[in-house]
Image (cartoon, rainbow, N blue to C red; front, side, top):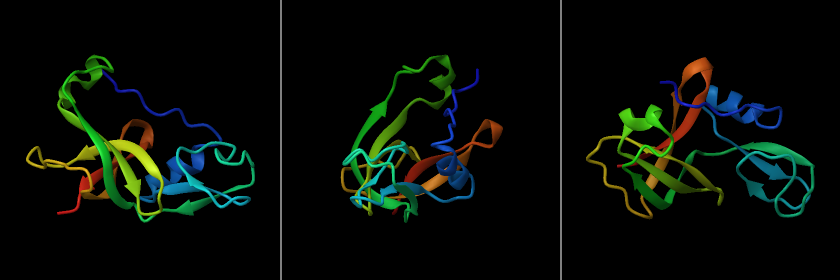
Length: 134
């Protein structure tokens, strides 16, 4: 069974193209200077549409996490159980929801340092996951 892929729109296409190139992009408001993720057409702080893309270091710390043991997304996810969902606070100050990858022996903790790693899926889409820096 195929897993769902992200819906790529004109607003998100630069983000997904950069992921395929091994780069993590964030949106930056040219009006108020806010950095944010997920990509959208207007700044969530001031509603300006004057936005640009900024490359992230791809490094950060685990802000929160949850280990998933039930395939809530359907049978397509059963083969990946258990997996760990993380909220990463990137070094740029932006929080990003993603997934932690690595050895089953890796026990995450809030504050652990992580680095982005890209995983190619069907149709050339690359998903940004994170791995513990140890």
